[in-house]
Image (cartoon, rainbow, N blue to C red; front, side, top):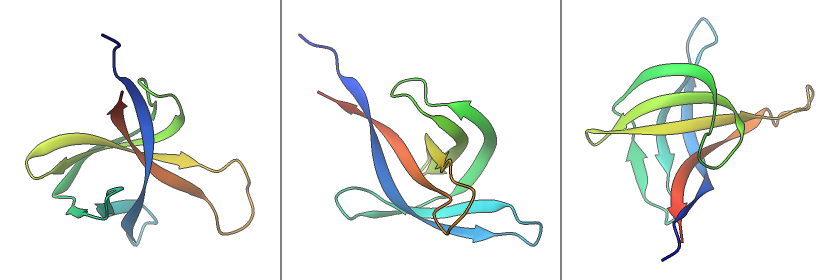
Length: 93
């Protein structure tokens, strides 16, 4: 039996910015259209997505009592309005 390989699922994220300019995710839309509120953010740090690759900011979030990892993958371009995109790792057959 083949082992499941993780994949990046790019998601829409509702974000607010604090007065200090910090980005705080509040909800995300999964690939099937369901929207999940983020109960709280417990950690933010630069980290690699170990299972599926990629580098950026890893937000440890709590959704419906479950801890998950939400990644912000920064765009290499320093100009324009596309500063990056969000993804969550999921298992893939």
